[in-house]
Length: 147
Image 1: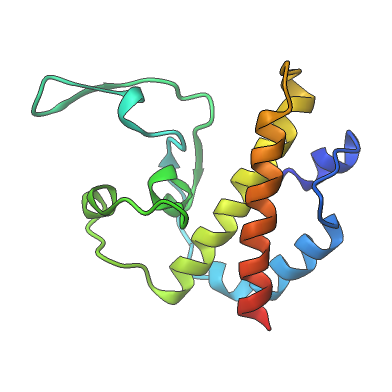
Image 2: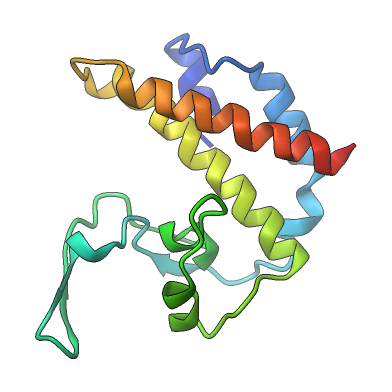
């Protein structure tokens, strides 16, 4: 989940890594229904899709693709729901388990964004600040849900 990478490079996520791990373990049951991985682009947005006006003719920027839960796809982020994207997956709403997994995938993305400055040597810390801010916000939701 990137937490080991944060520890390896001593990247301060502004939250204890141990808390993130403990809370993820508490929510393990929400992941049990994911039994078959799917190809996930993980950066699918208008700028990475080519069309002829009606049909998709190409998709670029596969560097972050992986096999996993389709809810990892960026269109399922809980902080920026996209109804058209969800309709493409034949979904109007998410189940409770799907919502919780999507929240954890937000956290996963936030951890990776928090690490990018260290690993990619960006000139500014803007991505780090954005990632750690998102991580703090989404973890506060997890805390609230878990009680």
